[in-house]
Image (cartoon, rainbow, N blue to C red; front, side):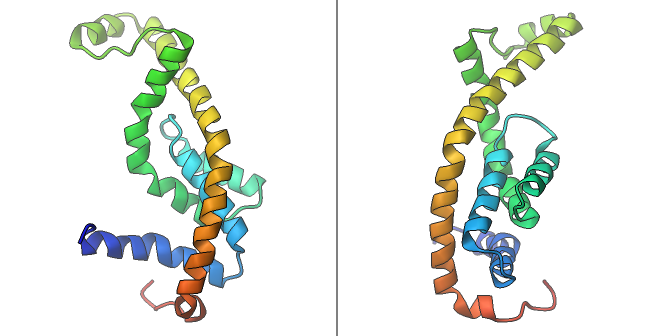
Length: 170
């Protein structure tokens, strides 16, 4: 078994069942796919602490499912952590800015110059967001397309779950 049973059960309870409930509640696979794609793409952005707010705002603005968008965004948290530094490093490379301070001496030097530190952090973040924006513009429509196909297959294979009533403890 490649995936532990506890992880599979967590995925079923926290992701699969809520999505099936949305499908059962009348959300179309297309709208649900775009909602998930929005959440996933926003979930990997290189900013810290704004994900939930941005997802709420954009899902509302585009009339997408808040629940599905939040599921998509928050399921990306581990991937967000993995991609955070690569987005920043790619921004440093593309915009030819100072590298991130990765050793103790560099960090101590920057900590003695708070305005320079603030300027560098803003510059790294801004450039990383530009890189992420390009990736997001390409990835979101592709994700929505493939997620829609996956949701249609999920509906076909789980007709009993979609038509059944949810358990009381959910």
